[in-house]
Every structure is written in C-alpha cells, then in structure tokens.
Image (tube, rainbow, N blue to C red):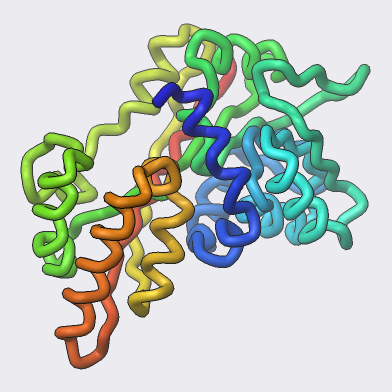
Length: 264
C-alpha cells in the first residue's frame, strides 16, 4: 500500500490513537530545548500533530504552536485537547499542501512520529523555506525497541507474522536500540539544507494487558490495513499466548531517536 494511503489510515482510529499511544519522555523535551536554545514564547510549527501527543507538553511550557494535521478526525482530537491554549492552532492539511499564514515566522519546526510520512521530495526544502538561517528542525519517532532484556513474547509471536506474510524479512532479534542506525540524521545532511547538531536516544518500557496491547496494534498503519482474516488470527494467537502467563500481560519497549538540525 502506498505511503499516501497508509498515512491516511490513522484518521480512522483518531480517538483510539490518543488513548493507546504513549506520550514521549520528559527528558526528550528537555534535550530538545537544550539543543535548540529556544524559549517561550517562541513560535513552533508542528508537522503531523495527530491528536496532539507532542503538542500538549510544549503548549504547557508556554510556546506558541501552529500545528498541521492531515486527518480531519485527528485534527479535531487535537483541537479538543488543546482548547485551553489560545496560542495553539491546528490546521487541517498535509504539510506538502499547507500554506502558512501571511507574515508567519517559526523558530523551530518539529515532527513527532510523522516525518517519515511526508513526501521526501518536499519536506526538507519546504522546512528550510519556512525557517530563518540558523533555525532548527527536530524530528523523532517512537519505534519498537529490543533491548537485551526484551519480552520473549515477541519471539513467540514473530512466527505468526512470518507465516501470514506480514513479517519485515529482517533478522531476529532486531538490532539493539544503541545499534539502530540514525537514518534521519543521514537524510538531514543529504538534503543540503540542514546540518545535524545532535542526536539523542530514549528507551523506555510500558506494561500492557492483552486488550491494551491489541488496542495499541490497532493504531499502527500496517495492522489497520491488514486483511480481516489475518488480523483475527493474529489477535487470537496474542490472546492465547498471553492467557498462558499468570499476569496475562507483556512489556513493550519503545525507542525515540531525537535528531536536531540547524538550517544552513
């Protein structure tokens, strides 16, 4: 399925996304502010805000934020959650097609778990055009992490994905968080518009009950778009494996890699 179609799937689970997806570590925001040197009430532009998971902490810190969100339902979720912050606005548009208000100036552009969905032929050039020389672009994702003590549940469930043709074809187990390449930093430099000034890695774990974990999976594009029969089989196997555990739950680890660049 194309990037355009997959990125549109998130809007179908807008309210579930807000409840099931984790927030980002407080240390990530501290590092973001330390590396960029920005302070309230600087004006930030967020690309792909979703329901506002990364918008709210920065709004609470006193920043003015213009957020752009492709999905109608996600944008509405964000507006609802940010209604107490008059300095925050949410525009419903793709970043590629969005036109900033006349006279708008931004001190930082950032994207949380959204940058990979933006057209690579557009995103760096447009971000650079919206920033003054020396302005900053910050990008981070929240991906599945596999530290040395990762939950063996994921080794047990992997054959189910492989048998359905839904595995990624990579080696098992995946690389440890510290060994994951920072492809975003490579993109920054290759764009010619941004010099990377720093990267930081954040790993954390979260405990999920069976139904909480399935609700989380329902917010990932690949699972949203998965054929109904495959999804039914997968969730049956998840419930079966976790029912055999006394606690009936699992731990999923997350990795966020913060990449910060300065406009050349």
